[in-house]
Length: 393
Image 1 (cartoon, helix red, strand yellow):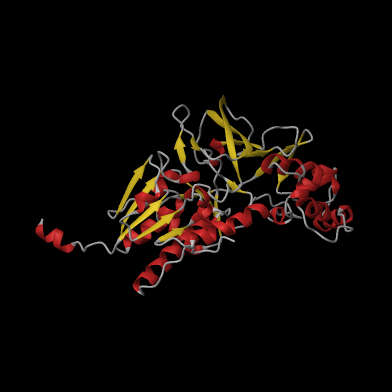
Image 2: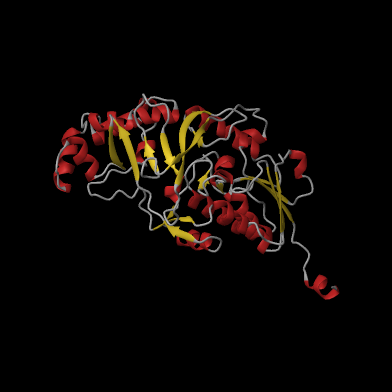
């Protein structure tokens, strides 16, 4: 016993991570391996944040409780990292859309175009046809609507893009920036893989098991179901906050705008819709999409099925924030919070909520790995630790 105690070096310092999602879990693991004692405190009764998964008691189907999460990346470092903690199975995301009483393939591709216009275009013919449909008179592209009309034309805009942002964002497409639509590809071939990344998959045992393994280290302590106050941060050498930056300051400068999601969960016999994700762009349909979760594990077989109807609305203070709105008013408010935060000592805001920006899982992990690396380097140099490792504005 004496020898084993003597062999264990004292911790390099004590660090607190607020939130047990991907960001603080990855940062915590990196710092724990470097010799820090890391405490992770999470307000929810589980780890993994919004990528939390659990096995349904009634059907045995793995449910993505906060909406579907497909891991996709071109970052080899991130892909190698997550594969240390999970058995990732190949998964191709193939989204369908029901609009105008018909089913189409998304993202818009050659099959979508041919089906929609009842044609048999070749790639070159389809590209020329869409060019003729496009609104070339729109030269100053500012809004989501401008972008869609200029590059797709009226018919495809009305069918696939007008109603969806009204439901998802609570705004007319003319009020949204064009950058929102730039993330949605249009293809003149039959490729219906929703993502273009080289690495795509889903962990066989779910994301919660993966995060549990990341947090499984002798230098990491995890406390669930408890909210952290600023007083709880006393005694730590540094604190990483992955919670909402405005909530940390009790909304004293205002509440940043988010959209939240509600899920209506039902169980059925057999196969409900034949695919994992069916989008509903029509404004007359109250939900944005239906997800059928057994299709996220095609390597499994289930007789029954579980579906989620997904509804978007404005996020209140007690709701789970999903998507930052980031329009002009919000970005101005964020700048004020950033200035306020920079007056704090030994505190860094990290992750999508701490920096108020939407990030896919691979970007979240990449930023967390970089934050941990930078923290260790700066501590070795006795240099100040930044309030933000990645610029939030």
